[in-house]
Image (cartoon, rainbow, N blue to C red; front, side):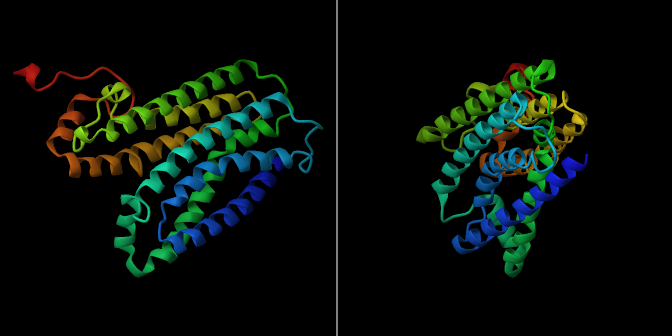
Length: 274
């Protein structure tokens, strides 16, 4: 555990610099939405940091296959999500994402000061969520094993599902005829938030992958924490609040008939009940 604690300390120093720099840029641009891009992209450099620190914390020479595979998993997922968010932020810049615009309105003159703390919390969250990756990278075991293969399969399913959901939503929104309507295309017909569900599945994949390493069960913190945020904090609650304001009764009917998170078959519609 000494090696893990050393890497955690190094990671905290890294994210402090990362998020302080991001805050300075966001302050200049007056667009705090860029933190979402940096937050997503930052997991790749964290994985590299853990790999480069292996000799420092006493790990064996060479980088095990398991460490390489989990690092590639992180890099691929991180780049895809950061790219997706960058397109979204750029599409409405200089206007901020509604979440940050709302906070700016609530915090007033204290916005910059409070955002600094918010950005640092985002950095700390990166470190906590990267725990399963850290545990795999400092493990000198080379083979993937059953848990590694299962974790990789879950990760791949989550990555594919999230990418597909994002594309389906983007295609729906690109059609002017759909303005003000509720997207129920593809995966969105079975879940109101398929992108969130498959994003969570990615984190389950990392955690399962880490179960094959010493203290790997600690990696379960990551999907548990992500599930809490998605279901109770900044994920579904805020998204649904905004959707209700913009789409009204159409979204209420969507809520009534469609699973909130896990993709599932629709409930009977009002018309079917007569």
